[in-house]
Length: 113
Figure (tube, rainbow, N blue to C red):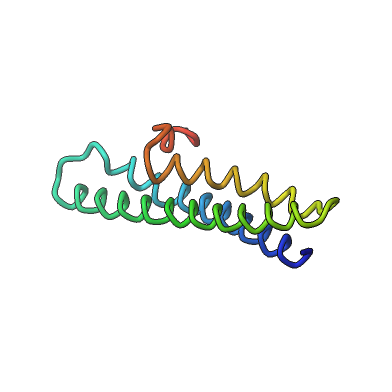
């Protein structure tokens, strides 16, 4: 169970890393080209939005898999601290992925400004 919880923790941390990359690269590019009307900026805006949504969905999927493995490991064995941290980081990754992929909270472009 220890290896399952550590792998879930690593997956949750990788999902958070992917979220941070998405936030710094594609969300910023999307909001940079959002209000411009020339055809090149519109095309770049659509490409950045597509990548932002795709990476956000990958963060959600990675967070869900990490959450499932850590919850299973936490139920099977008590005092499994990597599983508890994996659950915490997985939930954070899921919420941040929802922010980027679904516009559920509509705050993705304003965190870093």
